[in-house]
Length: 520
Ligand code: TNX
Image (cartoon, rainbow, N blue to C red; front, top):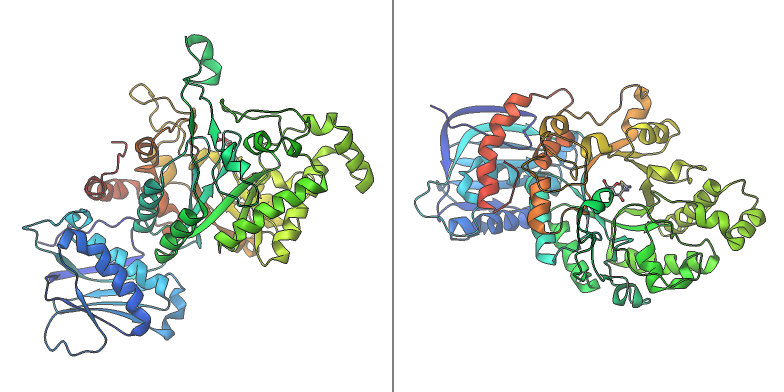
């Protein structure tokens, strides 16, 4: 009888055969210089559970000892940077790829082919570390396989960010969108403007319960100060950690809306001159940045420090949910519109985003923003993240721009995961069951064939209004993120929900080993 293989995300092609490759403390890893990095991360990954480090060597002096080979193969370009092949026989595991990312994913697959205990953080006795014999060819469908984490509404300690990145890597996700600023907290240290974190990272309390049923609550605010931020040094370490796991970290500095924490720190950034406090309730605030040159330069100074910390080709500038009330009432904003010849406030927002687009482009980066950046005209080099359904993504690619699909209907992991809601702790609302996530198809119907490739991929969102702790984030993220990892990895049409559920059944034991507080 063959052991069951349960991979998540599932591989493109696999043929299983009889027998096993067994790993013990004599097993050697063989790799040339260019595969060393992956060989090391493979050893590091297995070491806690195995209780020993496998030895790595350059050449084939192994004799008849079993070996695991990691090899870069220039002729495998057809599998792309992230594809790989794996062949497992009782004598040898052979992982081959065109690029290191592919070898990294081969290593992740080997890990999932091992008994689930390999995900333990402590040495496990009495397990036979065996990998079932098979031949695999694998390759992702999309190049943007993302998850977004909102650390503004609730701050999460660095240890959790590391854990989250590990969980993404294990699911072969390659993009971590870090939502670092919002009305309720500014979470990134900016050396030039220390008040952003001295003031902007702390709020005096938080609304408990839903905005709209505050009436039923005897104490609508919890009275507990909340806050925190990531130092530049912590950010550098996190970015490096993610990089080693082939994850790009996309920072988001939200503008011109969702800006109250920054305006609380520097009132001159706002439209009213009033001193504000860092937001303590959820929803959309009217306090947005003004469009004076001094504010645009302030934010570009911020971005300069951001660019220094994040090598990401894409920089997210938000652009979502910007009420135009204050601009309508501001003589300065109105004068500005007249001066540049803009017809309305949508065009003013568009002007603001264009300034950021030019700035980022001049520094060799690419602007990405939520789909509201389409309103009033899309900036020249912008990429759209489509969250209010698919419309924004469709409009973007039809006009030749790139898009990342993040529709709230299928990717908002802050929505409830059961219909009854009964057993579930308070969430923001909505209903997004596991199956709906699993069945999501990121390329909208009706996009002409020549434009489909402009869809870079898709992303799952973890807005944290109702996720006060890491445990809560895990509960909302898993297992839906497991399903989502298949949405962005699998070949189009490779879709079988019952089969996924049965693989997930085994996969949950891996999450158990990793102490993930997933929804059962
Ligand atoms: C909308 S999605 C927002 C967020 C909220 C989220 C809650 C987006 C670009 N803006 O500010 O947290 O809904 O689901």
